[in-house]
Amino acid sequence: MVDLYDLISNIRKRPAMYLGRTSISNLRTFLAVYCFARRQMGIPQTKQEQ
Image 1 (cartoon, rainbow, N blue to C red):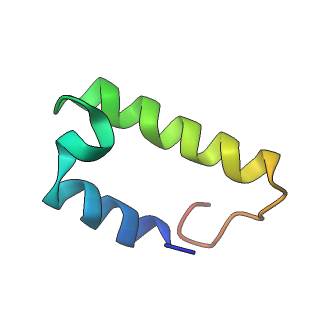
Image 2 (cartoon, one colour; image 1 turned 45 degrees about the vertical axis):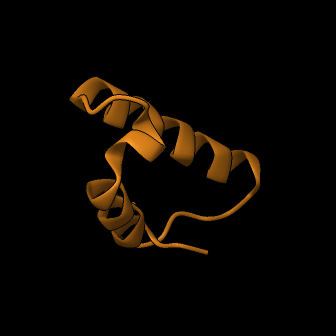
Image 3 (cartoon, rainbow, N blue to C red; image 1 turned 90 degrees about the horizontal axis):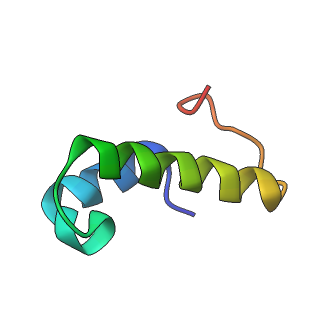
């Protein structure tokens, strides 16, 4: 599992692949969905995410 900082680093390298177009609102939406999906799967928050 990729941790939050690794994920953000990957987004920084290739934002269009993760966000569609590079925008702060798309990043916010992506991270909100990421956190929602982790909760739905029962994966606890890491210290980074807290």
